[in-house]
Image (cartoon, rainbow, N blue to C red; front, side, top):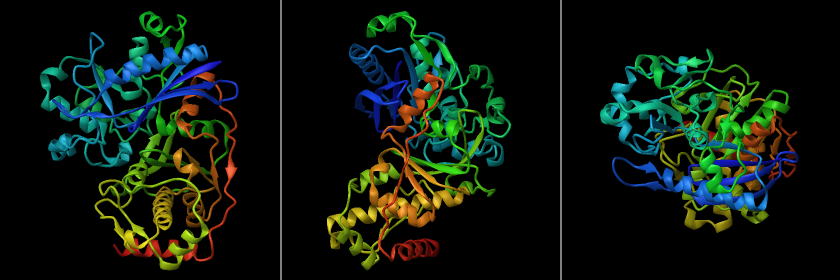
Length: 452
């Protein structure tokens, strides 16, 4: 069984073929996912993405005939679709500042944190705020909406013509769902959006066969099933939810580093520090925290790969650190400006890379502590290839650190929906140790951060 996974991240979009028996990725196509800086506001180029999806399905199907399709995307994104199935407004880029124009007004109607598990976030990171802003700023267009679709289900809808809601996206800091009660939030009811919300379906449900005209355009066999789909961080989590006993934590890395704890010790989440409650594919609440680690890595010019011992020794010996936060407006230290304790230009390039890796590991450890994570820590995605990150995370958490078997954990997780099962993840335990002094380095970082 060959499963095509449409995997749309904030930075890149992919169509990946996954073998449903071995769960190996057998082929993939990738394109950058940019933002259109044009009226009425910065938005995603959905038509360019759609053309890429159809072309990729066609090309990959010629290599390996496709048997099923699953979808996964980033969160904090919703699409407003009219009766004709077309967008009534472009799909807003969640990094656009516009929704904050109504931020204070929105506070009077949004659900409280204890209800929604959603913290107050900057820019458009609360999907509920996005929708509220669109309804107030573009009332004529909004009035034409038939469906509010979360981003994953927008693409499933385009493939099948069937509208659906799904809890992993509704529960992704959106203000739209009550994770502990399993129902739409008071915001949905008070704003009259209930009629715009399609029926809630499970992530693994088959919404329908692919539309005949799309199958023909892509050269696919008729009737290929398309599954409802799943939010990307929850896709990374799914194989572990289905196969592993608690407690443990999963660190999903990409543009965002999203940390999720299964079987966590009871803690009171601090909404001011970008903690939240996600909802996994089974509908269960999952304490979570996150920061824009992949974005920071890119901005800082981070590079993965092994670093020479001399670079590690230089950093530990000089106490060279990067204190949070980058970007400044998200994560556990919002509003804090990033600071190097030793000027970057005074470090060798390898040492600077070690500082970046250590910073990201210590930020991740902070997030794990905030959500009460216990047990081993499993790292998925690009950071799983960064040995300095993994070794410092091991020191900072005093826990076993393991890496997943795929660089694209989201795609494999989404494929599980179509396969109807999950593989036992092939995990590798990080055995390497940092030199003596690493624990003191981590403690010093935390001390400096606490001083503010």
